[in-house]
Length: 450
Ligand code: AMP
Ligand code: GLY
Image (cartoon, rainbow, N blue to C red; front, side, top):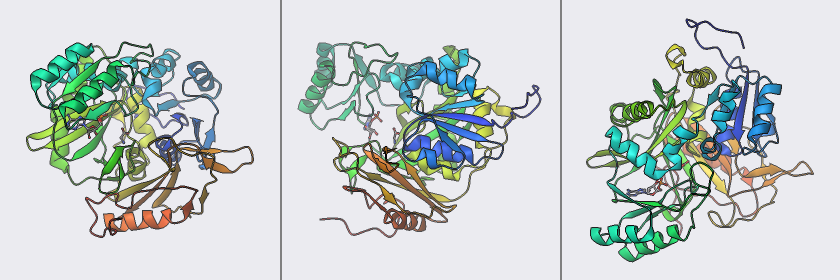
């Protein structure tokens, strides 16, 4: 990478390390490898698909091994690290790499609190005047039950700390709320706390909001920001948005729910105030802010912030982003977004369907060979998530969400038709998927299953 002066545009990073092993990191690796000027993308630890991506190399280093990741950056002259998942960010990976002079796209442990502590995020939102549900924080069981009884109606129960999307109960009855509170204080959602240490359980009780949900992503260098097209994912396992919550069974973008004016409103009401509040706390946030919004009758409300790209929103969005992506992420990492080239965004519809393993979101079967014969063209991608390459070289299932099939077209009906046709070329024992992904934007829908 050539040195620059303060007046130059940020250069393109030649060698990029993507940290993580899911569908999101596969999509990031693919999108970055196709940016002109990027010579090599390394993915650690990657999955069964990342080694086969053109221009990508897989490193078998766990995302928890900060020491080995720092060494890899030094040995391989990495210009930019892009951290995919929240756990290594909350555990301070970005801080560690920055101490060694590496440019990192992803906040430090302080900024990652936006996702790692619901309570901290709520306090920040309140301080910043960001529209969100009213809430009450409770540090023990008795206090939580008292708040609930005083309220007299069901509240949303949210365990503090990272809970891999499983710490939230949207209860229909007071009894269900009480049970959820007992579960939190029984330590069911303890994941090691926001800083890696095992913190005492605590929770946030929130008033319940109503409306469609949409995901908004801001790439930021701590001051400026670039907004990506809004996306909508499908959290429930079952068709018709029924059954248990998952990480996301599919997504589409741009979500027409939020037009250009709506997105501007979100920038003004949510993202700019949050960035300003982070700066007031001395937090230099460089990475992506993911605002999970509910569009209520009274306007957009923040349901949650995440400090990373959504999965499968990332798989859905990456194919729409232009060749400036690598330079823009480096500019965010180095605090120079104002000098970056504008990020071009293809005005197309992107459709993503997840193929999951039998049993997901519960215990899943693993180790089944994956057969995928897609001729992935410029408007069709197959990203691997829960897969791995076995000793015999075959790629087998290794997790709940196994693959993401993504297609782009001029309209959503065509994009989804292409994604589902491609999914027909994919098979593994016990493969399950929803046939109604994007039902909000499709005019042709399958007949519901009995
Ligand atoms: P979270 O982990 O905070 O994204 O919450 C998971 C899901 O719970 C969200 O995607 C919403 O569907 C739902 N949820 C969270 N908070 C609320 C709320 N205050 N009102 C209604 N639904 C909520
Ligand atoms: N798809 C939602 C998430 O990544 O949290």
